Image (tube, rainbow, N blue to C red):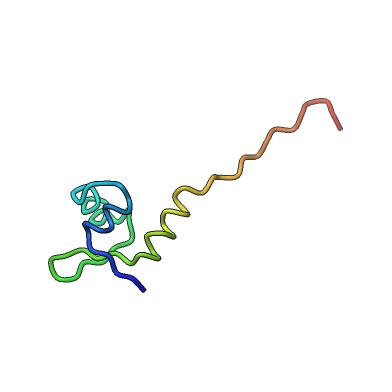
Length: 67
C-alpha cells in the first residue's frame, strides 16, 4: 500500500493542492486526515478514477414497427 501526500496526489490527478484539499474536505475523493495533513492511498485514488471515468452503459431505443 502506497500512501501519498497532498502534493503528490495532486500531481497524479493534475490539479492543485488547494483543489484536492477542497475535494477531500467535501468527501469527493477518498482521503483521511492525519493530524493536520491529508493522506491518500494510491490504490483508492486509482480505483476512484476508474469508477469516475467509466462509461455508463447506454440503452439504445428499439426501432418502432419492427419485430
